[in-house]
Length: 207
Image (tube, rainbow, N blue to C red; front, side):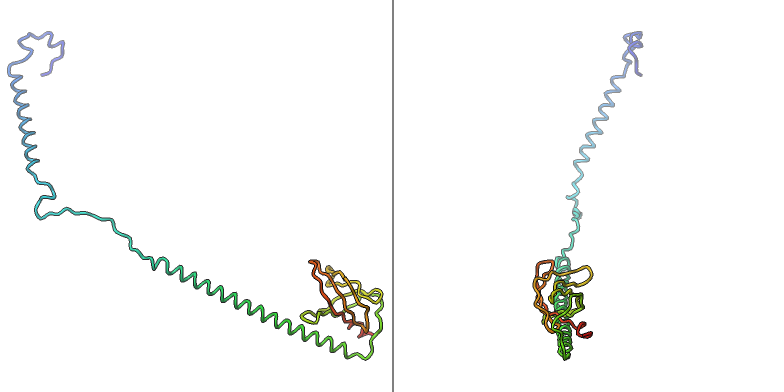
């Protein structure tokens, strides 16, 4: 039984510690000590997990990733190599095609120049001069250019050279027109120059 201070104060001295109270407490303490001692001996008597016969400790290892360097790098390398080969082959083929196209275009231009010259040479009479005016002519460089152009004649010389309605070239020099033919030098917008033979075919047709 638990007493408060007030209760103890009002209790006779001989009743504050009932008879046998300390003996009971001592017995309980001894009992608890014995139980603790028995528990300690029991724990000491139990062998460790690794000492039990027939039982081995189990260790776990993290799974290792499978190394596949050949699979990882060979495929991209082969693909890049294949792509480069295709690109090189395509570039080569494009160059061949371009060269072939240029060769074919030049053959057509050469054939056209021959045709214009042959037609020009078929006339029996040629004028000594050309009146001042605009004329449709054939212009050629005797290599890979032969096209119809518009020129203006002044003083029996070509003074203006027009490619289309919005593009004109500067005429640096013009020989006198003779037999409906003249040689001129023109300058492009980028500064390059060209020497062209001018054939007044349209004028000859109406001469």
